[in-house]
Image (cartoon, rainbow, N blue to C red; front, side, top):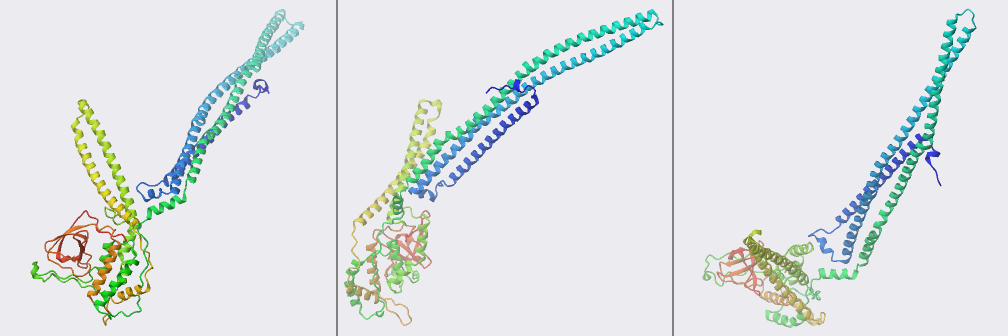
Length: 617
């Protein structure tokens, strides 16, 4: 379909000017639309990135430990894919800006300049044809005026010539005036015909050549403008389509992350994270309170009954408190209950016969002591410490065996990484030193030595720490292996007669005074000591408490009751638990000997670097 503005719209100059102006405004409008879309994409991408960053795991936080679960790792992969997804929206915004907004902005400027040039030529052509028309009109009016004057002059001459009273001179004068007017009219006619011919020629050129040419250029300009808008719209769609494959990969990655979730693996991680390594507690022995609490048997008969019942108790013994360390448990079961004795007036051993008396311990049922311990403040504090992941001793002895093994292994891995890092730095500095030796102008080789020495010291220290943690790890693994090989005796197989014997023994341990208090008896000590031996067998695989300092005995002391330890004057001991306000300090002589001594009998030297004795309950 052919249509030419030059021929079809030769007389619509003003309308074409308005239409082309509207066309440019439309391009500007579309450019603004694409610009706002680009801003939306940038804002959306920014919000998506902020969302992904908000839920990324924080460094050195508890959230890092959560990502050992497949569901958490899948969520992390989803966040990473979402970050890439946001990047594609940024790419879209960049392509829209580069390929559409910038191009159309530059094209609009060119379009305005081209339109201005074409209409300037059109206005100049119109001005020229208007000037020609004015000249033609002027010559036409002059020709008309001269013709009228010539006609009046001719009429005057005819009138004078017919009058017999007029002189001949007047007649000649009138004839000459009429002839002159006719000549002027003839000249005006010729001039008018000339301008008329010129105007017709210029008008023909204007409407058939000049204006059609200008309008044709305007038509081509408009067609290019429309085509350019179409290309921009196509580019707009292509920018969206270009990122679809990568967006699809991001979505596929999210789907793959969701499919990687393994519920059984997550539940297995829960076992690995919280497994203590202890065995479940055995059956609780019956304590028959229906029997009389007063002692009706002699000490010898009590001991005999205790000896008979012990094998049964050994068979049915279970670990009732899997989170209690042996030393802490026994210290609570048999720790001194009365204030310590005052220091002797003389430090000589002769001043006090056999040393000061050990603190007397009120006799009370074993179950009372155990109940008191299980509901004590120390247990709750340790449980809270475990829950919030509080710090403990350097050897992680406050943790259960399985958790301690994992913690020590993690520390060994961290130390090995630090050692490798130091060794890499050492190798790099050694190469730098060799370069300086071969090329002295590049630097002083001796300037590297202090740093090398520092790295060697750090490496040695890290290696010592690694060996220390490895020794602890071997110890824990050995104990876990021994524990796994140990077969627990079946509980609940003892007969009713043995149970009755044990309970009778427990019932006859204490004798109640008339005022309701308990009195001391040596059989109680023997019974508690026997019980302590049972607990030692159950918890002998636990770690000892760390030392928090040392002490020197000022006076001799002979511990006679359970929970105390004897010492000689001037003896050096390790402090494992400081005085809690009751006048007693817990000390250790070796791996198998520890107990309480009066605080006033010793001089304590605390280790400021020690973290204190902590018990995992």
